Image (cartoon, rainbow over all chains, first blue to last red):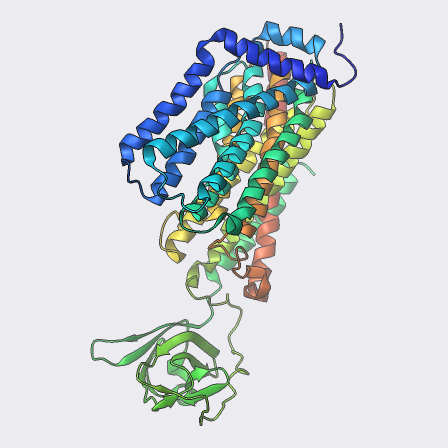
Length: 228
Length: 340
């Protein structure tokens, strides 16, 4: 049986649902992610206290977001087992699989970024987020989360194909996400050092462009990975 | 052309480059104006010949259009003793220094003096002296640049490393595309990894020479938040990751396919990090973030005469190394086939 010829959005939607269902079936997976994010924030809180300066506040929230993203994207997924993949190559097109995985990771990062932001506001305070800057920073976190998700989805797929786990994704991924981190931290720094959101909006647009560009790149390249 | 041809031409060019780097003198320039122990104002210069024609020296302070002469004494070739008598009224408190000499030409030092007590007046009574025509009588020399001084020779070693790395990574990128386009495991994959390895080697040397240069011109081995530095280090790490990825996969067909995909990703990142990012960020590097580039006015004909051969020489040497490694690979394959 060969892979279906035409691209179908229905199969993408089904794959997203399927991935989510498998995650829930595993039980510990999603809870583990939430706990990891919360305890990282708490560790950050313990290290700087509740009157953190703007610079530490900014540095820590991005570090926590990066590690949360790595934890969420780089862990082995049940669908990545060779026998599952073998089956999937016959019933879905690679583009559909990649799109579904990216959409799923985007959704996951949306939740995790919101959680990190909420926990940060709770523990480390919102003293630096006056005048509507909280919303801007939240938008930045979400966009950075999507960009990280796009990048790490492809890398995790590569690592899964290589039969290697978390370590390989980290070795390949940490340098590759530097552009995202640079733009994101600069955006946060601008905001927390007193610029308004409108004044540093180009960084936000840059993050969006990175997310879109990396996603497009991943969607173009992934079919080559899956070819047998 | 085989690896010997590339290497021979490259080494020949580099011998010329190293000879020039070692023997071409640096042009004259003013380093600083300072007060010595006796409270006298001294001018420190580099590569100048003040003592050979002390009578023909002329020294001015002011700005290019409004200058007044200063009294002075020549201490030695590189040192002058100034006796500035500032007028009560000036058009500017911060003044440049100009030294005109028949041998060294016209040398200038921006904002050499700051006159605190002067009353500023819009009008002026100083004769405007034309000092801009002074060309020097020296032989072939490298231009004197503030901050950079003698380290300008590193231009021939540091910058071509990145050109060579770009060139080799470009080959790697093209071969990875070829591999993904082809159906079978051909030579493209081997070419991609070999050129990436050679390029990585040049990238590491580029980092080391850059770090040395940063120590002498910017004052530190590594400067945080310079986008060019970040980009260069990350690029080296990404290609190191590429080699780690290859080492992680045993099946050669799978390894070739996976690493080709990662390689395309890495090269696009290299373009973003080293060519796009630095233009949008503040950087200490010339030509980036509003700093003037070497090729706008700094890269004069004497530098060009050495820099271009250096670039071509390093690229040819890189090509030679890449070809040599390919040859080693193919020979070791043949040996493996012969051995039972």
